Amino acid sequence: MSTTFRDQAIVLKTVPMRDADRRYVVYGRERGKMILLAKGVRRGRSKMSPHMAWFGTVDIMVARGKILDRLAGASLARPFDGVLESLTKASLAQGFLLAVDALTRQEQPDRRIFGLIGDFLEVLDRADLIRSPDGRGPLFDAAALKLLDAVGFGPELDRCVRCRKPSGPSMAMNFMQGGLECQACRRPDSLPLLPETVERLRRFRNAPLSESAAVPPPFQATARVIETLLGNQVDDRYPAMSFLRRVAA
Ligand SMILES: [Zn+2]
Image (cartoon, rainbow, N blue to C red; front, top):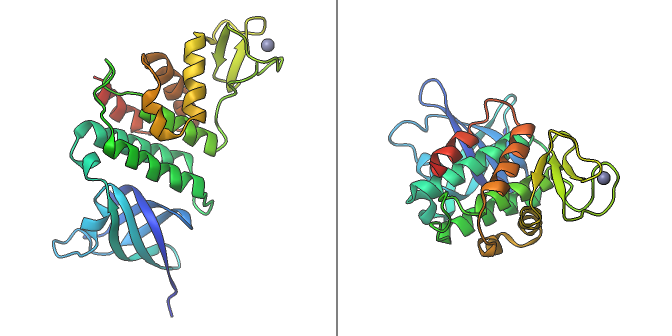
């Protein structure tokens, strides 16, 4: 007898397999990251694949398997049409979903992460993105910083990582140490940051995602910090950065 369970999930990525099968990597509200086998979904008559192809939250039914759990049913609960209809938004969404995949493990469910993915897609869906010269805006970087915080890789932004003194006007980011250094402690290869950049990063961390659009440009310096932090935590195969560079080009 097979056991089944239901969850609400967001598809992080899909991997085509032999025959007409597909593997979905999803993030579930209750179960966290799961890898699910879907049999025959690449045939035209599949009922499930249209629901899984969208950017949105999907009600899923899963049948437990010995090796891989199997997707037994899928129904799109909340589509984000605005994300799918814009190449820029779709690229940002895919970049973020791949970052979630790269930074999370199976069997470590975290409702905050599920909530963050949903928030990000929701805000992106409604966002007016054509705001900054790099075409990217603050939304992805704010969401990425919140994601890094949620998985425990967020940078120290309030104190010097070496002497623990509260941060002053002249700070630099030491990526290997994972945070800011004061003028007295800073190493030559740390990245000097303007006080405005540090303040922007703090607002990305502390303000709700929906308010990140109110953070004023420029975003080049914050983007560089976020991309380096993400790049340090994921391996070389992580493709999200190439998505983002395409967006920024
Ligand atoms: Zn110091």
